[in-house]
Structures are given as C-alpha cells and as structure tokens.
Length: 348
Image 1 (tube, rainbow, N blue to C red):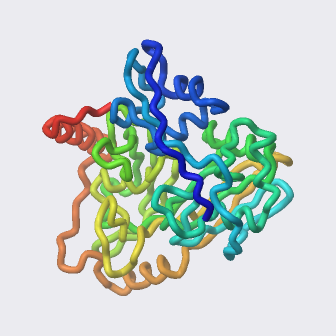
Image 2: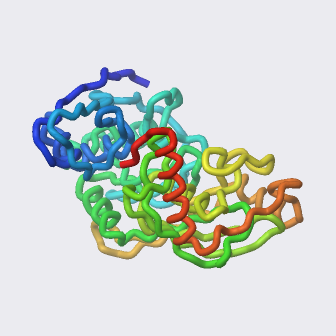
C-alpha cells in the first residue's frame, strides 16, 4: 500500500449560518459538495472538536478540522480473487467475502477491494476524470459493505454507469435485501425500524441512534426461528453506515457475532450478515437486473447448528423485543441523550 497521508487541516468559519458541507466544498480546493459530505460522514471532520452533520450551521469563528484523505493513488494493484456474479462493459457485481475491507481506512494494513479493482479493471481508475462527483480514491465504488459483511456489491466500470447507479441509490430505486441471524425473536415478527442514525460522539468508530442523525429505515421479516435466535430478511431502505447492525441492536436483537453492537458467540467469528439479493436498472439498457448470492459457508454452518438445537447464547437468557420497534429506538435515542448530558458531551 502506498502511503500518502497528510496532516490535519484547520479552517476558521468565516460566515454565520453556512452549512458545514457547503463550507468545506467552498474552502477545499476542487472538492464537490458530495465529496465534502463523504468527509463528514466518514468522521474525518470536526467542528471545535465535535462530530457534526453535513447540515450543521456554522457560527463565525468556529474551528473546522479536516483530516484529509490521501491525495495520490492509495494502493498498488493486488491480485485478489473476486467472485464475479455479473459483468458486462458497464458494470460488475461481486460477491464480497468476509475479512475484505472495501476501501482503505485509518489503521488498515491489508490490501482492500480497491487494490483488487485496480488489478482486475485498471481502466476504472480514470472514472474520476469524466465525473467530477466521483471519488478518485474509491474508483468504481457505488456503495459499500462492512469488512465482515459478505454479499453483493456493485462496481461501475464507466463514468456514465457510476452516475446512473448513484442516482438510483439516491432515489431509492435499488432494492437491497440482506439475511441476518439475530439473537432472540423480534416481536412483532415483521416490522419497520425507523430511527435516525449518526456517528457516536463518544466513539467515532461506531454509529448510534441520534435525534439529529440522518433519517434511516430498515424493514425486516422473520424467516425462521430457533431456540434462542432467528433468521431475518432485511430490506435496506436507506443506506447508512452500519445501519442494519445499529437498528437490530436498538430493538434488542443484535446480529449474531457482532461484537461491536451486540455480543460475540463461539458459533461464528463475525457478524452473521449477508447481502443476498440486489435489484436495479441496468445503466445502459434500463433492463431490470435481479442478482442473488447465497450465504457463505460460515453462515450456512451457523444455521445448520441452530437447526440442530445448538444455542447461540449458551446458558444466557434470551432477550425480549423492546416492544414496538419504532417506539423502542426513539426511547433509546432519548436514553443516549441523557447519558451524553451526564458526561458533559453535546449531541448534534
């Protein structure tokens, strides 16, 4: 991996009431508003030391600190085996394995999916030259999956395809369905979790329910129940970082193996979350494409063990749902605010 890290940049707010993303787009040479928003969403920007939303209104004199991403090629191409589910001249869809980070992040030392993309499709590196909104450090990426989440991921091979797929995501015309094994049994078994998500002010690695977070919706349906676990199908209506993991944890049913938002289990060594189904319009032909990738071996093995009667939690009691999902996550947001106030921290 090539290291091009740069020190933090400090900028002083020079206008009252200007949105943070607009301020960054204006003050960072060559940055679009979408690129500025990605810096904010990825936790690389602070306002007087605080994490804030893109729409946060600055006051004159506030200090905005930007931890800039690299300015040159992040990674050298690396030959990593990719399971390609669909490919044509315009796009590719892969079935991402676990333990593969999609793009470089602070502290990441292993080659990422970006290195594999640059090796297999070197022409993708030039997309940013034809699309000012494209991130040159993440060539071809349309959306992301967490490091240990497996499943279907779209890669644009042309600037036109990237624009089309990006617009479909913004307009919520891409249908993304996941399968997840969760602790306990949600009640009701089918529901919609509607709660805003933002970066945790106390830990920028985590996301949490915040009243001033970004609107977030996850639909879920119980497919199969076990002694102390359930198999769910989830529909990602919005696409926030860690969304399904945060929402399911918020209603009392964290994903099995998710140590960050729930608990570890000896039955699987990562979160049991898999992007199984993807439906979207082909960017060149307008044909509706539906692609499916069945869960990998570790999730299938987990399901087999649960069907045979093994317990996800051992002797621990099975948690109950925190009543109706929408109400429960609103209560959690209020609880989070009270806890932050006790520690003297501000939530924005």
